[in-house]
Length: 271
Image (tube, rainbow, N blue to C red):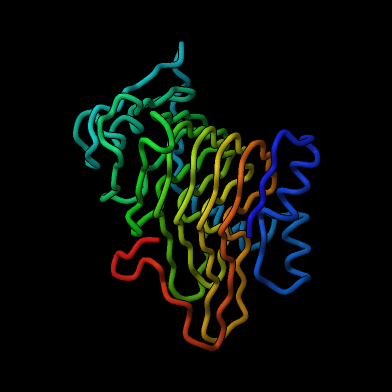
C-alpha cells in the first residue's frame, strides 16, 4: 500500500490520512469505528495507559531559554555525550542535536530511549546520513508526554515491540501519548505484534509528516484462540497531517487459529 500527499488542503490531508494511511486489518465494523474515533478505542486506551505509566509524577520545568544539547558519542550507554544521556538531561522544550556525529547509525542496545518530557526536538544531519536503529529488539523512542516529539533529519528504523498472551501493544518504532512530528525524516522496518496491535511504525495521538516517509512497517495481531485485530500497519493516530510525504509498503494483518506469520526479526533478522 502506498499513500502520498503533496501540498494538499489540510482538511483533505486529515481525511485522507485517517481513511487511507492508517489502514486496518479487522472486521469492517471495527475498521469504521477505528477510522472515526481512533484513540478512544478500548485497545488503544490500554496502550496509552501503559505508556503513561512511564511519565514521572513531577515533570521537569521548561528551560528558559530553551537549550540545545549536543550528542557527541555514537555509543548507546549511560556514558557522557550519548543520545540516552543527553535526552535524560534535557528539559521541557529543549533540543537534542546529533548533526555533528561521524557515524551513520546508532544501534540501541539498552532498549527504547525514554523521552520523559512533553516537548522535545531531536535533530540529525539528514535521514540518509544517520539512523537510530532499534535492532529488532525494542522501540526507538517512548514518549509518555502530551506535547510534541519533533524528529528532524533522522531515520528511525528496525524498532520492535512484542507482547505475549492476551496483551495489546503498538508503535513498533515510536509510541507517544502526544504528537509525533517528522520533518525530513523516515520511519521504516518497524514491527509490532500482540493479540491486538495499534500502529506498526508509530502510535500517537497525532502525527505530522513533512517531507518524510513511513515505509515497510508491520502490525501483526495474533492469537491462537481469539479473533484479534491490527490497526495501522504504518501509523495509528487520531489526527494526522501529511505534506510532501509518503506512507508505503505497510502490512497490517491478523492470524487466528493457525501458526502466525514469521516474525521478520527472528534471529535478529532485519528487513
